[in-house]
Length: 501
Image (cartoon, rainbow, N blue to C red):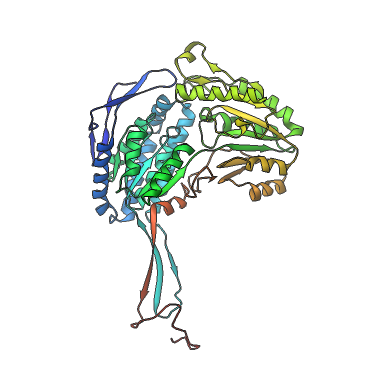
């Protein structure tokens, strides 16, 4: 741990906040100081946007394969520093070290992947309906991208946004979450060392009300990519729409695992535990619902209770820890409030349900892994995102009923089904309306080369990861080249049988 002062990054320089103000971040497992950080504001955002706007003039013309070479170098640096970055991540936001390594690996994978797009960035060529005419489309960068990211995947999610933005020729003003500013700094340090020109990426730390709002409302930031709560995302979209900004939203989830009567219950148990309690349930893809066929409900419940009850809470840096802390005391209280709500609604608390305060756990923000049984689909704990280590078993009598329950929430990010019947699996693929669906796996584990995102209140139609991410960060230009030497009018001038107009 350190009391080092970490600064904003603007126009290629590490600088104090214009106000001179700072804020602290402490380890949610131990309370120890992680660092002191510059607390930016509107003035700092203005400077960052000016730097990004100036850099865009040359960066958009920098050959895309050469942009890719910078990202290749950055990816290798991330790989070389993987263990150090993972340990710092665990100190800053609490997830267990194996999961932190996975978070870093996602950033490595995305950076390598988007580096390769520097030699593709495919457009289209099509035949023309007229003679001696060539048709094609190309991608063009948009300008300064405002990137606002959450704390639960503090390297992976920024990489999902920044790498496609950069490879396409955009510049960036980046606000990392206030709970994980150091990881944002580490990513920018790598890009700087890899050779990114000054001003192409700028980092301003601080609150959403100060820094986030200033980015969203700035007239020279035409594009905003936001990941966070549905309430905040809806507000971002509303304000952005007033000034015609392009907005990408990745918001909440209420994800479900279906367990049919023919499922491998051992495999299903493994998948549920990982999906429900990984990152202490603080994932947008976390499995907070288990839609289980009534004939196997009792056995599945017993398996989950036995396993969850044996999971060890503790500092994520310790090899024996299964579940780390949640991110803040406020989040801890919110999670426990939902436990009380579930009990009041009549759900049966099968295991857990308490804030853990024994011994060294009292220094941090720990909640027991919690399983509710006999939950109705209309209960609040089955409808609202909890964002903690809580899952709810909802019994059903058929696949049709299970699909209705899965679709019966306002969100639509991820779902899964455990079954040995391929017909049931394909029914789920056809009828479940989520952005991601797993068969015989949990609800987490997306890979970076397929689109990531959700339906309904989870998002607004854009996707991150894969080549789909490039659609958000680029504008299509259709180009028509007429080399006939005369005016040809599409849809008007006829083509004769001999092919001559």
